Length: 288
Image (cartoon, rainbow, N blue to C red; front, side, top):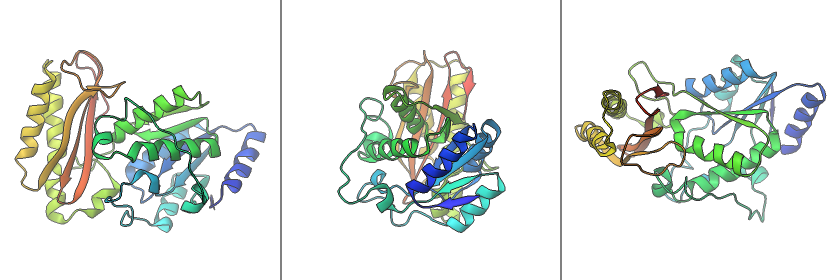
């Protein structure tokens, strides 16, 4: 496994793979890897000849009062995990490599970014689209893998690839959870033991919403209110949003009459966590 820091090194390695007729799978990450990330890498390993992983805490997707400085970083730990699941290349650039002096070009999107996390994190998706677009151009993968926990991000990236005619397949992979139900997240490390217990309210709320939808409920507002009621029982929890949106457009809907995403962002103490579940019309569930 190679660890490289420059765009030129990535391109040279990928060029060699292409000359050998090999396919390339790519997993973009911000590091501090956990089992959720590893599940993406393992799938990329199964479906491609070579696997590249980026580890880059992208400054352009953080707002001025967010956790860029404190976001957990541990390259040695991440590299050991990557090697253990068959990664061939880690791209670990410095911010100046990705955003050299004078950088002023960004990729932005309407509609899909105007709901959910896009409302409470107004610069976030411009930063995500920009860095992912750059990474796709650098790595030139056949397939790229993203977790469904960041469901809005997944939808945004799929639409960006479609709209900008990028020649790759974007693949969403199921949420990986702890044994007690908490969705795996690098930000879980911020939680105190008391907050860690309180954070289970997210998965309990998801379970309540799923149960209601599977029972045949078609009123989106009733689903939202049931999920909010579960969260309200936890004193350490503060809701950013709980919403039901169209799975393709990310716009709020009133009836569960199409593929939908029930998504939430909840503060546990100072830590903002997200979770969701997706379902097709009629209660045929996917993901969680």
